[in-house]
Length: 132
View 1 (cartoon, rainbow, N blue to C red):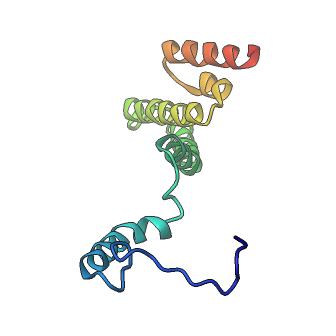
View 2 (view 1 turned 135 degrees about the horizontal axis):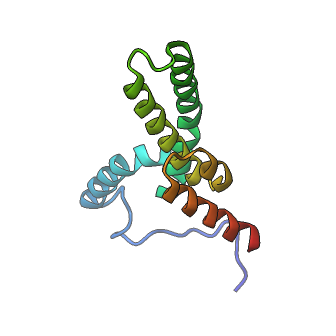
């Protein structure tokens, strides 16, 4: 049989929303649940992609805060709030390194992180990335 463009077809009554009120209600409920996800630009992103986006957005803020703290350390020369400023600098460097590592920038993360154990791990990851 050849397909005729004028051929009429119909859905089974069980699937036809217009004829079955129960199916119509289910479809409306499902539409309410799915609509926000379909409209969202991030609806199809994996958790890893979300983490990379967040890391990419945090890096400029962390860099700016780190520069401010380092400037404050230079100005005060550790006289006022010396220990707290150094701890803040180390914490900012650690967070910055973690976000760089999320973005696979292990070389810079190894340079920045204040803890030698993490620097070693990031350097190892960088070497692994370079050799593969």
